[in-house]
Image 1 (cartoon, rainbow, N blue to C red):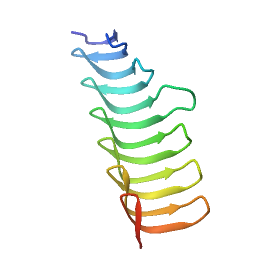
Image 2 (image 1 turned 45 degrees about the vertical axis):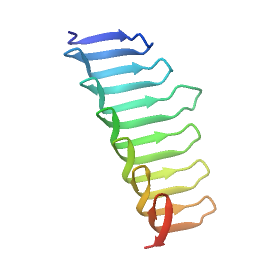
Image 3 (image 1 turned 60 degrees about the vertical axis):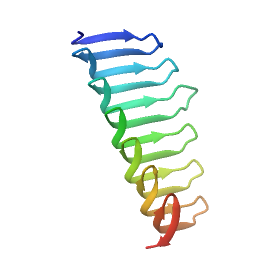
Length: 147
């Protein structure tokens, strides 16, 4: 049973280099999937836990996430950037945007407000690229009413 620094190459082509505890990834490590995606950060009991950086394979720029993980899912504060130039900065719960966050789209539009299950939900401010602003209540990405 591994209990220190080590390297594993899996039959699927994935690679892990990092710390182990009781035979599982635990502490700092780097995981590279066969498809080219990669993660560098904290592990606990074989899962992403703590701070980390994930990058999707492909040409630059690529999708990235930097932030907190719990039980292999985005949880807590993090920033997700898309290759298109859009970016979300805010809270996550079980891999979904939840709580307060800001979304910036490549066209210059942005939303600052509350999210639930990955969509705009609650009080927020949407500013469109033409300068039009809508402040109020949102439900499932739809502006419902002013404050």
